Length: 535
Image (cartoon, rainbow, N blue to C red; front, side):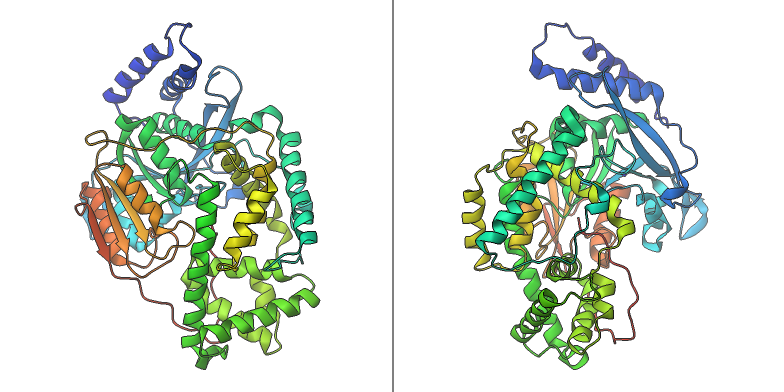
């Protein structure tokens, strides 16, 4: 799902200050817009004082950090303030193909990596990659931690020391007793969120995230926002474009969430579970094609049988005392997000079946040192999604819908239920989702990037967003399913990204790219590579 532009920003701030001073008799529906105007005017005046980043961030010296103040509650802009952490790598101004040629700075490119609950603080490091040199020459690369994340007024719903509970079970078709246990855990989690955060919990939602983004724009000195949103970041961007269309300069939606208000968020999660079944089938077919390397069988069914055998063994005896069926499923879920995990997961499955559990333990175990960050990410994820929209509050509805779905999509269905079930028992008020849309001429051209077989944000979401935003262009990576195309291996997609961000060019209404190359199999001796976060 992260200085000073001149006259237009100052003029805009004067207008916003005037709006903020509207008569006190304005109705409550005007409170958040007027509060946003107040916060924006304040941000223009204060800016961001960038300096050295905290050592624990692990960022290089070329990246500078600061904070921006935003109201906890935009209806009370002068009430409690929270600080969002921000990171920035200034535009280099150097043409990577000709060091003597200067490149015109185009402002800040702000990134949200998704989640909700993911931090964007590491985004400025993208400028070190060869394929990002041209963008880093023209733009300050700006990341930030959204409200609730990391050091930005962090949320917590349970003791991080007890967050990882492995090894744990994950039955494909849970019994009534297992369901009762998980319902009790969901109720306890929702209760913990309410007790630990009090009345402030209600203010962690997507609409406030969009308002925070406008305050960040102003604090950076930008009259209009250039934004790159990935995964959940596309929904944030779509809300921003609907609330602040005149503040949009350029906007990239990478792996788009379906913004239909009826989909947010319960139905989107049902669709996601169905899509992960298809992507799981892609992995199994790939492993079967490389049976000569992994020995998992030369059909997808045989690969599934091997996986089922591993899961059954882990239910009886966790690997290394740490990895049970739930940890196994979480590890292989990442293979549904990113196909560059496929060789490592196939090798770990193969090794375990041959008597070596070490690769599986390495890839699937929960590391205590990561517990605090993982607990924080889940707290923010649930706070935002539970607050954003109505959810079914009757367990019978969840049970009915997901029992039916699990018959044809067993891989992820129940895991997705247990992740989201606290929303059934949430104690903060629910919002009605905003009707995302923009008519002709309301926005400059925007760019949507999507893979046809993306499971985390199914392709129908990109089609729906494209339909709702007039003037948007949709670039499709055909027959591919990795989640998040920006920064990936497809040079065609990256070419469209560069043309848009550097020159404002979009490829008409629709364009397509051939899929990036499938990963090749890797021998057992190659365990290199770290998992990317799944958001």
